[in-house]
Length: 180
Image 1 (cartoon, rainbow, N blue to C red):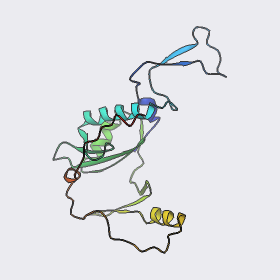
Image 2 (spheres, rainbow, N blue to C red; image 1 turned 45 degrees about the vertical axis):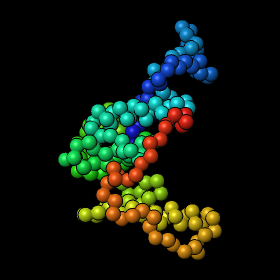
Image 3 (tube, rainbow, N blue to C red; image 1 turned 180 degrees about the vertical axis):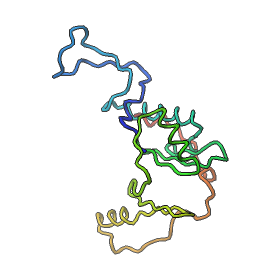
Image 4 (cartoon, rainbow, N blue to C red; image 1 turned 90 degrees about the vertical axis):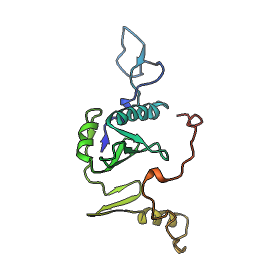
C-alpha cells in the first residue's frame, strides 16, 4: 500500500516558521507562517513521518522488531502479520491483511497496490504454501556494473532454519547519532 502525501502527515516536534514563498500572491495580513505539519523538503520531514506512522501502527497492534525499525509484527500471537516500511510504501503479509488494511486507512489516505510482484530490487512470488524472494535481476545489474558477470556464486548467507524475526541476535543501537 502507498501512503499518499506521506510526509505531510508528520507533525514537527518543535515550532517551525516559513516566509511567504516568492511568486505567490502576497498575503497582506502576514509574511511569516507557522507550520502545523511537515513539508516535503524539510530535513526533519522523514523522521516526523516515521514517528507518526510508528504511533499509528502501535495503536493498531503492531510493534517494531528489535532488529529493524522498519519491520513490524503483530503483538497478538493469533494474528500472524509482518509489515515492512519503505518511505511511504507499506508491504505486509500474514493472516490479518484485510483487517489491517481497513484499520490503517482510518489513519492515512492510502492507495492499495494489491498483490506485490517487485519491490526494492526483489522479485516476489507467492504460491500456496510459500513466498519466494528472488534478487536475480538486481544482483545481475550490480555484477554487470562492476564487470563481475563471470564470478562464481556462493551459498546463501542466511541460514534456512530461522523460525522468526525475534530469534535473530540483536545489538541495541542508539538512534541519537542518526540525525534526520
